[in-house]
Every structure is written in C-alpha cells, then in structure tokens.
Length: 234
Image 1 (cartoon, rainbow, N blue to C red):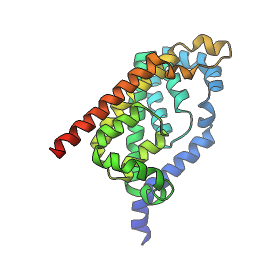
Image 2: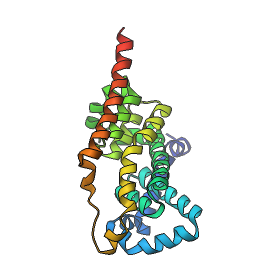
Image 3: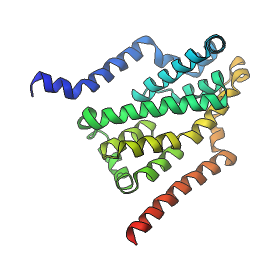
Image 4: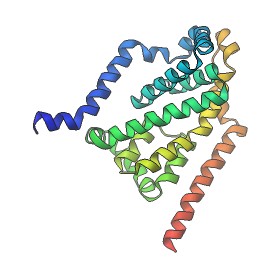
C-alpha cells in the first residue's frame, strides 16, 4: 500500500497515539485522582465562579479526551463534575462529554482501529456479538445501565460488530444518565469529605435504593428486546 492511502486509513490511530502521549506528558492522568481533586477543589470552585461557561466547556472537553483515549479516572472526573457544577448540571455536562467521547472512539474503531484491536479483544467481543447484532439498541442500553463490563469494551464492541452509529449514540446517551446522576450526586456533597482528607464511599451505588432502580431500568430495556424478538418471530 502506498504512503498516501496508508496515511489516509491510519491517521485516526496516529492522532489518538499523539493525544495519548500528550495526555500522559501533560500530567492529565495524575490529575484524575482523589488526591488531586482534594488538592485543587478550591481552585476549581474559583474558576467555576469566575468563568462558569468556560469552565463547563473545559470540563466537557476533558471528558471527551478521557473517554476517547480510554484513560483511567473517569469516575473521579464524574465526581468532580458534581462537585464543580452541582448534581444536575454536572450530570448533563458529563453525559454530553462521555457520549461525544464514546462516539469518537466508536468511529475510530469502526474505521482504522478495528484490525488492530479485533484480535486482542476478539473473545470478549464474540460474547457480546449475538446480543448486539440481534437487539443492538436495547442490548447496549442494558450494558450501559448496569456497567458490569469495562466502559472501553462497551465502547469498542458495537463498532467491531457493525452496530449502526445512530443506535449506538442513542443507547449510550440514554444508558449512562442514571449511573452518571448517582456519581454526580455523590460528587456534589464531597466538599467536606475531601477537606478532611477522606474519600467518597462509592459502594453506595450497591445500596438497594440505588441498585434496584438501575436493575429495574435494565429489565425494561431487556423487555424491549424481548418484545422485538417476539414480533420478529410472530
């Protein structure tokens, strides 16, 4: 293959690699920790108070980068969104950034990245393939509502099995809202905890009053998949 077509095919990978190196070199990954959040909480609050729109845009952009590059620390970033902007605005900004980042990764994986990652995650993708091919939207919605699998895998697998982009984007945006709202709500009350050197109790998501509604929403999405199967078989 000549250099021109080769570059046209693989430039997304080169761009992702450059961004990944820049993220590590800039220390972004070190900032995605509870310690860094505690150290910078006052500065973050001051920035939001002085420049709320710019701060919101910067937060969304950071979330896009973190999700697109599959960097660790997304949970800490979600908590930071709640701490900085409150539970409702924090949830909205996080869902926006996470959805855009997941969609960018989907597009890259569907084009240039697929030949490189398919072999490495082939076994895991094959486990998800039947559900994604049969009931893509509802199956992915269930995976988003109950995040038992790594977020990066759920981002990549639909692209590798050829799921339509529109269904992927919709299931992602809708499916991450409940979990995001929980963590943003926890983040909104972190000020005193971080001020005293503590850490949030993320195990609260397993509490019945939070876990059961998430399971209920997942059951509804599975019900939708069952209904579609029933109509196909009728």
